[in-house]
Length: 336
Image (cartoon, rainbow, N blue to C red; front, side, top):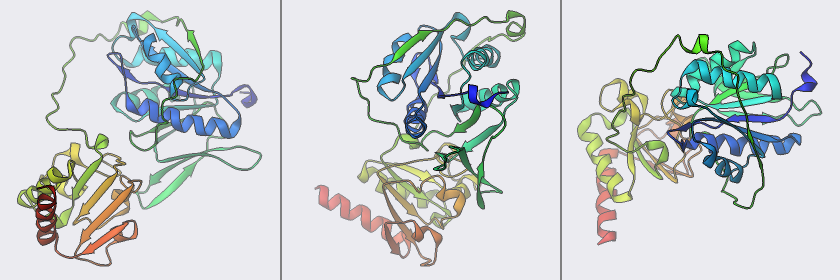
């Protein structure tokens, strides 16, 4: 493998039923930053059926080129046809770096592509950067050993250098409709003998009863100190006054008090709201990994030495069961 042949940063632009997923735009924003540091281009890989109308949005958010693979076999996500398509792209265009969202689709696709191309994959990276020296090494950082330390991983001898990134970790760029880019219709030579081994019989959609906390601008999050369902009812009342959503630490999910979809942290969701209120959360590193990029963090905890105060912009030392209702009533009086 001649490493010098590999160049540019490729992003898997995940779409579902013709709708671009937010993580694709977030990865384009990071790819744009990395490419500007190396003088390379950002290429979006857009796979699906009747999806070319999405290409302009990808260019507006930072892509220099869009490889559009429009094929009936890609209408619904299935591992084999998507893997074949990306593997052929890698073989022909030789990308230096490839980024994939750590969604249910990305977590399935990433390992299969990396194995088929005999390269490495850093899963759930929280930081991506290019070294400042002449080597311009691509450094991928992720939590290791249960989140007790951060490991920086390099893939020096194989290409592409691959990483998956969870939604909400990176920031998308503001759309610039004036950006110019190239859209290439790319035809894949599929091996049907492998694809036909698996058939999609039925698609079952899960009804979402609650909002996605990763999209919320305000989050009122509770930890072990909240105690029980009744405690979270106080947080829900405060969240309503703030126009936000309720979230949780892992402790309350493990206790069966909150749903897994509400969990913030290394094993939950990564969030970046304008306001994050941490109520009764001690601030373990696993939780901080999922919310420390919030714009404003307010912590309420009885323990003045709780680690959460080290990342909080404002801290209140006291009993959340007294403080939260007082805050709620105060907000109600202001809004009257």
